[in-house]
Image (cartoon, rainbow, N blue to C red; front, top):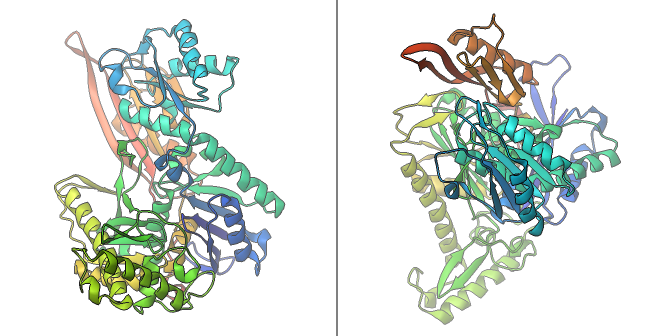
Length: 590
């Protein structure tokens, strides 16, 4: 059996999945149990344990072989800057100004460097490191990232600095080596990625330790995985080295849920997916049945990274968003103070409006029944504020004639407008840009969605309204209230390998596999041989038997003295993201 748990800002969702029989085919799975519990922000593990206990109370827990979690923990820590300061040690070499590269609380720029072919031109001076560490110590910086411009072609200088740090008297909480993050070049992206990796390492370590401790208390020993933002899973132990890969794990779970629960791949439709939660709404995009992918790296805090991931946009608006009257006008979000007033919360929310307008039943709350009278009371307070202000420009009918029910409809209209406008902006931003899906480059594709796929608690009430405004077809994903947990449970391990061969220098580098060695005399590695090596290493590193594909090929000759002396080839291969199975129609009843 497999357990998938998604820890969201409002709710923690869980599913228990099993094959129908011991001799079942890979696609013959069924969902045994689902759960949704309140997320306790100050005690995430308690939320996870409640979800886990609810799932296994009627099953044999010993049969759980795999537990996959998706979480917003690292994402929220970055967005809210709730992490300890990070110091960067940069090894840029000549060229771009080091001032352009600096980021974070403290930066130490070393004068040593290797060139673009991985050859050491100038050695690292330990005296520079020693002097720079004084500044780190004075500012109590214990999270360090070391990044060399061409370290993926020769990591020896990064490793030398890290060895010095480990031998230093002061102990550091986290140390990140830039060359371990990705096999692709892009120094500014690598700096940002390394910075965030060190920033969230401590948080992730504590999260990992709590998970293990909780499972030990329940005497469970499943394989533990976390969902990455590329839609694949990584063993929990491996995630400790690169916790930054779990950023955007929540939106990735939603997209994987669509792939598992719908047949959009067979229909090959272009669609927008919406996961409408209590705190945020995550927007995804499918082109011809496949999710859009960001092979160069996702964006965090408006900064480009090297973290390959599924394309998604999160907006701070959901069913439990705070509704206020500010300067005589309604404002929905971005804050969330708690659950809907109808569920005992402190303030009016869109969920209260949906209940008053008749889009929700009083029994649809996840933890206790909604109270219609409480919802009406909360909205009536907004009516009074609007009538007092009596200067709202966007209120129809006018504030004097406003009722609780007409206000509820107005709130829903404004809420859906916000989501629709963001979808339209997303599509406009992608016009005339190169677009990738998980399997191919779409050079001149015209993105014209025809379908809106909805999931999340409020989706049942909102997806048709949103689709009407967009002139799309509306479709509610099966198991829509826990679809993201389903996506986590069914996600397959996804890894990428970059093979770089410099026949002129006689060097082979496979950063992700930790391989950096000289070529043997018998190793010539033409282009086809290089591709085969990339596929071979990727299959060896993969935990499951699945499709591996070449995603990028770069090859050019090295010219010296007007003659060709060798070639440099860079090949990227990856396990194709996707679910381990897709649930079939008779298994999709909520």
